[in-house]
Image (cartoon, rainbow, N blue to C red):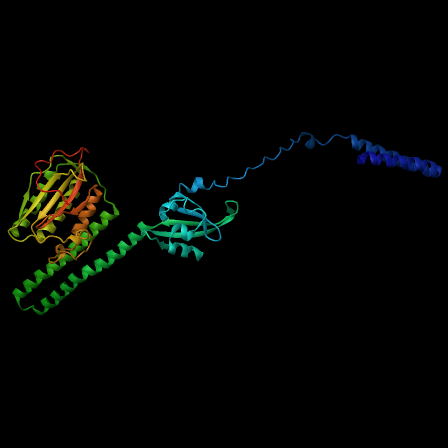
Length: 422
């Protein structure tokens, strides 16, 4: 029964009882009040609802929100270059992305539901994760890669509440190598500058004490000038190498004749070779043009010729050649600079292109800086080639390649001088 009907029945009962039981005056008053109340209830119950209620839109039913799939995170993290793995509190690998598998060197399937140490076989990585680092830490993997490791809790957990930790590893090998190279550069430069600075200071002190001897003064002034030139050459080559490694200098390649590069280099160093009684000969070269930057290719030949001239004894010769390579560098032209000096030891051939390397015969004696071959290697790499020391005795043969301008295969090397490098 509704409230309105209940009130109406109550007031009607009061009116009847009051009329029978009370005196006439009081009975009429009670009956009147009951009738008025009954009328108010009747009107109230029949009144239409307010306009706001009549025209208000009916509320739409709430749509159920479907929960995200358990593995929806993979669609995002699989595209990231960062290695990501989901772990539980016991450091068991529950899932991982391809970048993580690539960095640790193990397939994803072999790591699932396996402890981190067994899954990756990386002790340092496991030790760093067990310490629960609050900040990223750097770890060296067994393969030589350096990675930055960061661990973060998952709230809420993933994978049905099992995955409570996210492990993220970032490959920072290139950054680590750059920092080490910068440190080595400063250390090497300080070491190399120490000798000419000490020599210049000693000469200056001797020159000061020999001020009354004109001939001695001239000789010491010449020695001082040589030391200053050596320091200047060292600084210039260091700046050049830093510029090449930063790749700030634009590189534009064009079709260049190999013969023109060799002839230009021989003409440039002809006067220097003549003073040392050394001949520079250019052998018949490949006719196919190469894709190169003329200035940088000429700089490569200049550095190789400078190295050869320092080692060539009087009366010897330096041979320049460009051959159509039909070996592992098919489609490229191989340039060779051969001298008749002491040669380069087999165990040192991979290191002669390092900056400041001083262990081989090519670094002994003279006022060289030990940077010419390092610059040559960088110049060749920027033009898409490679550089090495060939197996040829006596003397030393330094080779480098440049790609053919047309990308065609080499022609028949029947008339090519020399032998292929080992």
